[in-house]
Image 1 (cartoon, rainbow, N blue to C red):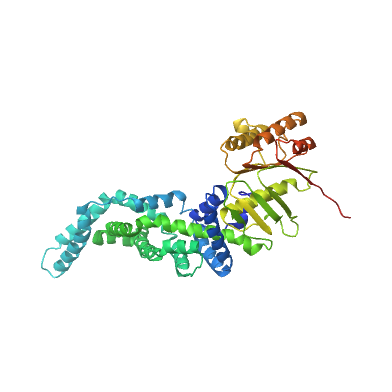
Image 2 (cartoon, rainbow, N blue to C red):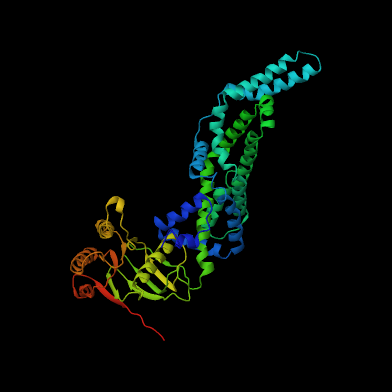
Length: 449
């Protein structure tokens, strides 16, 4: 439900930059936020949800970056960022001196030869010297400028995104933090403006009629390199932070989408506790149309919940509703419920398990491996929530009951909330086991007309 076709990511994402897409994906899969950080992120999402024109404007500009994906790859961006963070100079000192002195000397020689004061051969020598150096260092110059080639297509769009954030007035501390990262050290938009000018210098390479005359008179390649080196010393080490700030802004804008398209939403209360706890009122699945979604309420605290019921009665959807809303909660977003209180837990699922023919893994064995990771993590005595849909459905009923009972017993710990759906009513007898804190729930369906 998180990634892929008709997923939560597709439903909410308004991220078009690579850093924005990565930030949203990481928030959905590997969140590492404390309760205080989640509160701060919720405030940021809540503020952005009220700025719908800002969200539309920001996405419209960032879409221009998405349209340049053939140029702007993860590798090309990373190459440029590494170049900016590297301290060494790409040109020796004598070349830098020649880049200033030779054009001046060449133009002086041209002027003096026109006046008849010196022979024109000196002007020719200056031109030939510049062309020789250009060709001699052409490969090295290209290697240094290459990271900018890909980025230059999107510099103006990034610059506009920076300006949008820099000019806005935010009340959320988290949004102010992101804004400060872009306004410090002279400002990100000003830095990108300088980089855009350098990109225009580099673009001359694609106009042969102007490029080679410029190289022979102005040492054009070296002027571009000197300008880029100067920019690097001023802004190179800030660039990664700028792009990550824009990415996180896109991430928060994506989380705000749910507030704009759903009515039954709330911001979860994150409890700062090392004990597993989850309580919800009128919890619904965000990917189901509101008129069709059936909401449910539940409260669990370090216990096992066995869920039975007929096919299509809602067991699986209920488990997924808990899991996907916790994904949203732990990302710092709103959830589809009237109320949710939860501690921070590691979420494990065994749902939609598939076989892998290339690895010789059957569906049943794939489920065994999933549940094995749960049991192994359980040994850490860390808060965790486990969602298992139709446990061991890939084997016969006798073995299924033995295996399911063993798993439930192992996972029935004070630091674990386990929800298991099953068609085996015998598993409900675990509720009578004094060594297991278990509760049974049953889903039923009815038909009208």
